[in-house]
Length: 227
Ligand code: CA
Picture 1: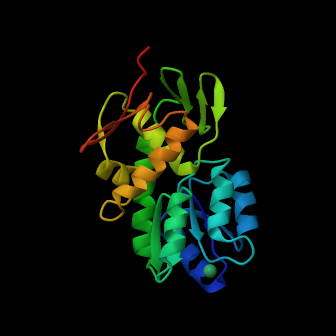
Picture 2 (picture 1 turned 180 degrees about the horizontal axis):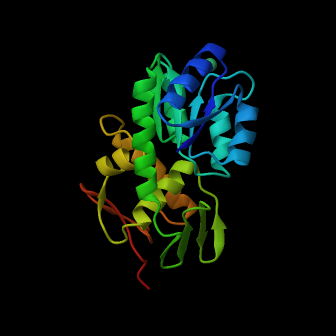
Picture 3 (picture 1 turned 90 degrees about the horizontal axis):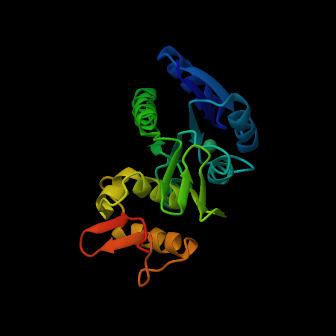
């Protein structure tokens, strides 16, 4: 049975969701604020976290950033309908999916199962190596020529996605769907901006690429540098 951690400060929503999700075959632990959620996430190692973004004290997005430094556990964020900015920030900080309040337990359960299926299938070999680039997928660590490179969660996801397909051209649309989980929205610019940050951290640029080659009008591919 999947073990879920629900981080939600509203006691009535919490109680209702625990009842509904338990009834649908999940084991559910709960936390009422971000700090408690963070420590339970580390101690209990749940299979998935449902995280309310509007929490007192440490908010959901900050908690997610801290969590992502130590864990790749799948996270679904719950957000208010009118809060696009914090939703985008949460997806950028490494959320896997989201639900908009008010949502039914049934739709949340469907999202949970989809994310669990996706993440179960998606964990590639522990480490991906392309030239001098070494990516430890589970520890979420990157080394370039033996030196650690600090990446944001999305930069890491982007690099790991490309490194799992060396030499293969990947379109920006595919990256928005698979890395950002935005199959219908999102702008190519999101990909461009993260690519340029990633390039800078890998010590290269669009004009002098080594690993990350842009294929004009098509997309990008990660290659072993020549020479
Ligand atoms: Ca709340």
